[in-house]
Length: 145
Image (cartoon, rainbow, N blue to C red; front, top):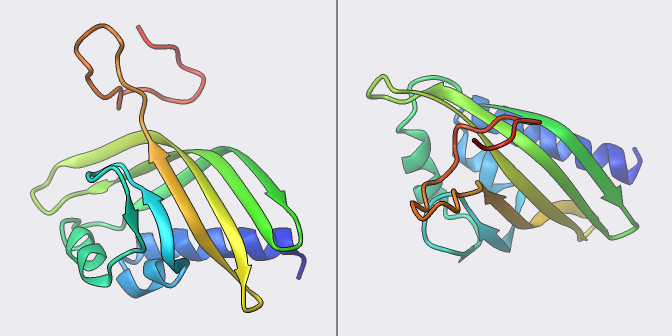
């Protein structure tokens, strides 16, 4: 399997782990000291905590579906990165339907012959009108109002 195919398979595994709400499956995709810039606070963390991931997954009653568009992948011998616009949708345990788009950049490194995510940056734009409201109502190819 080529490096690109391995990276694509790792991304599919990560997507399946979210859909199945499998905390171990999610955490296993990351290097133990991966630098994470997640949607939720704090600004950054190192590594994914299994218990925190499981607690977040427990707030969902449905599979967490993540669809990617405008995916760009660059792979070298030992480093790779993927950028995408992701749609996360599903239902929370309180019945709230979630359907948001956000931006991601994931960097990968081959560690011991196995590709792992070493940096994950997820973000949403925010309104520059003084409200600083997160613009979670955007979709690909849609301009802000």
